[in-house]
Length: 75
Image: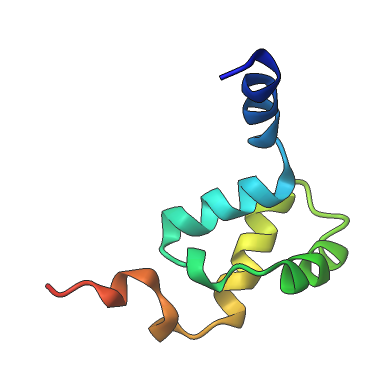
């Protein structure tokens, strides 16, 4: 890996979209992420203190509980 690649990887985790993806992955809803909804939710939460949590909550509220990533596993 070059130095520029390492710098880009480090800076990528501070992007709001990457933070939202991380929050959704923690909750098991990563497969519902798309940039169209992300941009729509981003415009709705302009006044929120923690935008990544607010956008992730909107994604979860907008999608049904049966679309959770954990439903694919056999218990």
